[in-house]
Figure 1 (cartoon, rainbow, N blue to C red):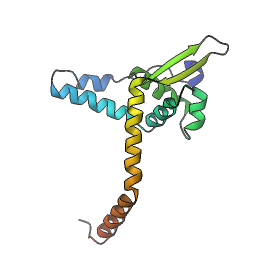
Figure 2: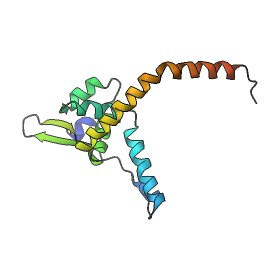
Figure 3: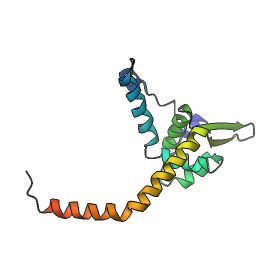
Figure 4: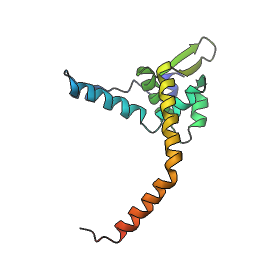
Length: 145
């Protein structure tokens, strides 16, 4: 997919964040961890990693499977995941060009973590719903202020 076809003119930059992360020690490490968590916790990143972990996937397949994502957002998210080393992009010399995205070993490890998190959420779904209902009932009777 060419940049012209997607309306995307360039790479998303972490430049403002990078300026805040300059330095040595714990603060710089914490900043890097925050950047990574922000990226993988983004609205579309998890879905893309999950899809790519099942095997090579093309742009149009991702576009169909991720309901509501725009072409621009898909392009930007794919570029950032590739930049972070979570996806490998392969371009085949065909007309039109065929592009596939595959999860890297690092993304496969992340996928396993996501499965663990999903299983945890499934196990505790009812407890969370109960806690929410109890909180909402309790808070609706407390005067604002």
